[in-house]
Amino acid sequence: MLESSDHSLSQLLISRPDRVLKLVFSFGLLMVLGCQQKETPQPEPPDSNASQEKRSQVQAQRAENSQTPQKVMVLEHPNFVFDAIFSPDGKRVVSNCFGETVYVWDAATGEQTGTPIDVKKMDCLLFGEDSDTLIVGNQDGALTTYDLVTGQKKGELFKDPGPVMSAALSSDGQRIVIGGIGSTQVWDLKTGQPVSQKFSHLGPGAEVAFSPDGKTIAVGGWLKKAFLWDLSPKHLPEKTCVHKGSVTSVTFSPDGKLLLTTGDILNVSDSAAKEKDSTVHLWDVETGKSLGDAFQHQDSILDLAFSPDGKSVITSSADQTAMIWDFATRRPVAGPLKHEGFVSAVAFSPDGKFVLTACSDQTVRIWEVATLSLSEEAAKYDLEKLKQDLK
Image (tube, rainbow, N blue to C red; front, side):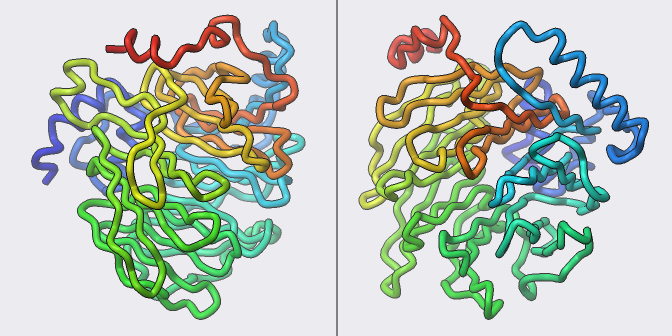
C-alpha cells in the first residue's frame, strides 16, 4: 500500500515519531505501520479536577525551576500536539491533540475551558467569521463548524468537499481554499459552492495559503513541490517550487511578493547521507523562481508564521527549538525557545505580544515576546557557516 514510500516512512518512524505519526495519520495508514514503538499513557481528561491540579503543579514547578526572565505558560495535553492557533481576538488558544481531540484554552490564564471536542482524523483548525466559531477539517471529507461559547456543533460548511488535508481563509473572510488528496479547490463561504476549478496535483495538498490580495493560492505536500496558482479568470499556468522532500509549510510575505516554504527529507538515501532541508526557502510569487534561503535551523523546519506587523518571523523545528527572526535582516532576534520534542506549529497572537509553540512533548507554550532574549550562541548566527557545518 505504501509502495515506494515504505522505507522512508519506516526510517522516519524511528527517528521522528511525532512527525511520522502526523503524516501517516493524515493518510489513514496508522494500521499499516502499527506505530507500536511507543505507547503514550492516556491520563484523565484535561477538564477533570485531578488533571487540572496536576497541570497547575507542573506549571508551578517549571516556573520555580526556571532561571531565565522568560515568561512562558505551559498548556499540558494527554498526547502529541499537532497544531495550535490563537483566536482572532487573542482571547483563546485552540489545539489539535493527536488528530483526535480539540482543546480550547483561555489565553490569559492557561486554563482549559469547556468540554474537549472529539473529531477523529482531524487535519486542520481555523477560525471562521468570529472568535466564537471554529472550523475543523478532517480526512473523511467534512468541514465542521463549532460554537465555542456553547461547545455545540453548528453544522457542515459544504456538501462533499472531499478529504480535507488543510484549509485557509482569504483575508476578506469570504473564501476558503481546501487542500485535499489529488486536488485543491477554492470555495465561497456564503454560497457553499466552489468558485475555482480543481487544481490537480499528485498526492495530498497538506499545506495551503492565500496571498494577501486573495489572487493567488499556494499548495505544498509530500511530493517535493510547492505550487502557485493564479485565481484570475485566465487561470494562468502553475508555477512550481521544487523541494528536496516534502513541503511542511507555505506562507506568503505580508506584501504578497514572496512565498516562504519549508521542507523535510522523505528520501531514504538522503536521510542515510544525513542530508537535511533545514532552511526557509524564498520564492518570487510573480515568476516562481527561487530567491535563496534564510533562517537556518539544525534540523527540518516544520512551521513558520509572520508577526501581525510583518516585521518578524517565528520558525519551529525538529531540532526541538523555535526562533524569532527579523524579516528584513534575516537575523535572529529571540531564542532559541527550547522544548522537549519536535516543535510542530507556531503562531503570533493578533496583537503580536505573544507567540505560541505546539510540541510533540504534549504541550502548547505561550511566550511573552517582550521577555524573550537571544542566546549568546544564537547571536553568532551565520547562515553560510551553518550551511557548511551541516554538510
